[in-house]
Image (tube, rainbow, N blue to C red):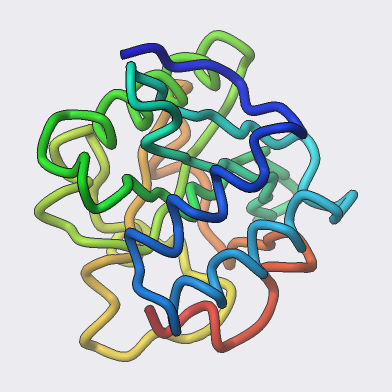
Length: 181
């Protein structure tokens, strides 16, 4: 398997990955979100990675710009959303490879924090932990059901515990319907 930066020519295959992973109804919403984030200047810098094997493209992850502002301090961050692996290729480490590669790239390029709203059992494997108890709140209030899934990872030591506030995300992601999983 190879992990690489996505290209414009990958769009159809990326759409198919999300449709397969999320099903037709939710998949169409995710595809629309990916397209909106790709066209959204406020999502820059963004990192879009694909997993490729002998079958073609089998996974996709997107990291987009976010910030946390507190007490005259502004910390650059990223939001991991969405992550998808084609249904026929799940459970083989493709998603994990995409997440690890993305986090490593962001750490090398000076990233501060990375946020995700997802399954705590899955994302904790990569060093994510609950963000709300650390004073880092999602762009919209989360129900108790989803609060555990709002997670953060520190890429630059010393940020967690020193910065608190509401995460500001790209315009395309700044919609309450994206924050109820």
